[in-house]
Image (cartoon, rainbow, N blue to C red; front, side, top):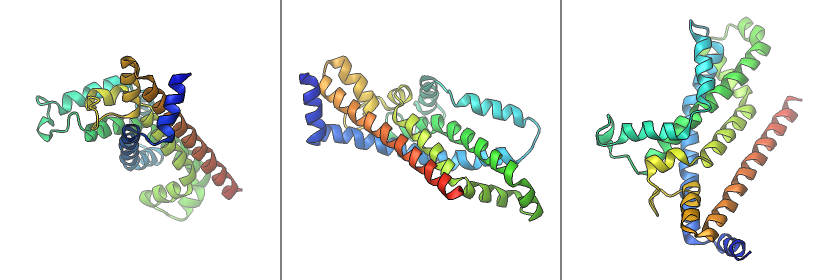
Length: 230
């Protein structure tokens, strides 16, 4: 079809508008995953190893947060960053930084929950050895995180997949401003509604390629971990 041919031409020729959108999408999503990892990995590991009253309730809530509706997160961040909100003076609304905040909130529970499960499984396996060596809580967390690094990379890639495909939250807090806060998902939605199918299809091709690449990386990392463990 003509639209498909035009879309492929935009991708192969490196259309500046398309590349700009893809670049911003990757920057926002990767930044969000990095921040979510800094929050989620230590929190998930501590939750796996530390026993305290209400722990089971925290785990239930954390697992529930993995399915946070993006539009609800977007609304909450919008109200927080709006002029009348508590952080309105920061002037972050309708900026890439606001989009990173929204995606971080969405991705952090996923990484934390997957980290908790992974570290908890390892703790069951290595509890006797680490206890006999009199390793403290911080040392246990560090040891198990290092040992689970391949599984945790898979968790990070899962978080990136969620961030890269997200549209509801970032269109609310970013505003979908051309050349400034327009990402692949928001651009696809807008260009489709405008009838500019070549650009929408081209961005869709790139997004699918990224998702496939992320899943291939996750599979490769998992296989590498299995070989090293074997």
